Amino acid sequence: MTNPVFNNSAVFGDPRARGARGNRAPQTTAQPGAYGATATGPVIEAQSLEQMYGAPAATTRDTGRLTYDDVIIKTGGLLALLVAVAAVTWNAAPGLWPLGAVVGLVLGLVNAFKKNPSPLLITLYTVAQGVFLGGISLAFQNMTIDGQGGFQPIVFQAVVATMATFAAALFLFKSGKVRVTPKFTRWLLISMVGYLAFSLVNVGLSFFVDSAGFGPLRDGPFGIIISLVAVGLAAASLIMDFDAIKRGVEQGVPAKFAWSAAFGLIVTLVWLYLEILRLLAILRGGD
Image 1 (tube, one colour):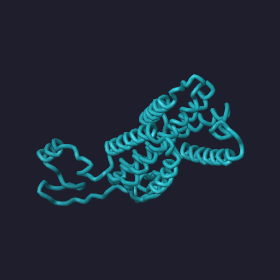
Image 2: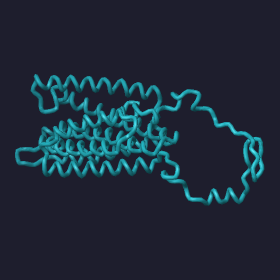
Image 3: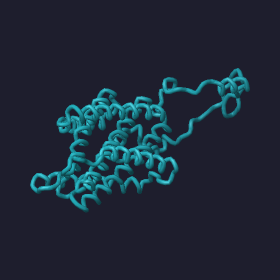
Image 4: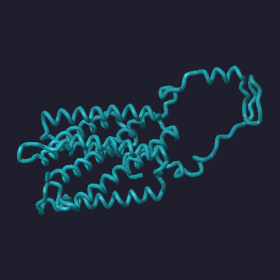
C-alpha cells in the first residue's frame, strides 16, 4: 500500500501477509445438544432457522465490526466539515492558509502513524485542511484574473473534476477492470517516491529561481505534463484505498477503524483536488 494511513495500520493489511494462521479454517467437533448432532456440528431445527432468517440484520453496534456504511458516513461528515471550513476561510481569513498547511501536515503525520484512530485528532486535521484549502484555492483562482477583473472558475471546476475522478476510480475498482496486484502496488510506490523527490527539488529551486508561482520545474508545458502524472497517481491511490477498506471489512476489523478509513480517503482526496486545481491554474493562467 502507498497511503501511510492504511500502510501503517496492520488491520488493513493484505491477509496473505498474515501467514498460514490466517488461512486456517475453524475446526468443528461433534457436540451433543438439544437438537442432536452430526460429524460437523449440531443440527438446527427448521423453526430455529426460520427465526434466524427472520431476525433483523446485525448492525455495527451488534457486531462491533467495520462496515461500508460506517466508512461512508464518517467520510461524508468529514468532507462536509472540510467544505464548510474552507468556505468560511475563503470569505473571512484566506491569509491563514499557511498556518492551516503546517498544522494539517503535523496532524496528518500524527494520525497516520497512530495505531488506534483518534476521532478528535482526525476532526482537527480536517479543520486545518479546510483552512488551508480555503485560502490556497482563492490564491490559485486569483492567478487567473485578467486585466478586466474577470477570473476563471477553476475552483468549481476542480471540485467537479475531483468528484468525477473519485466516481470513476470507484467504478473501475468495483467492476474489477483495475485490480490491486503486487505489480500495481510496486509501480505506484516507485512512482510516488519519484514524484515526492521531484516535488522537494522543485520547492528547493523555487527559493533561487523565479517562477510563475508553481516552482521552476512546474511552469509551462512540462508543468502540465507533471500535473497530469500527479493526478493519475492520486487516482491510483484512491483505488489502493478502496482495496484496503475492502480488506478491512472482509476481515472484520473493529468498527473504530472507520475513522482511519475516512481519514485515509480525505488525505487522498485533498491531494487529488490540489493537483487538479494546480493543473487548471497552469492551463488558465495565460487566458
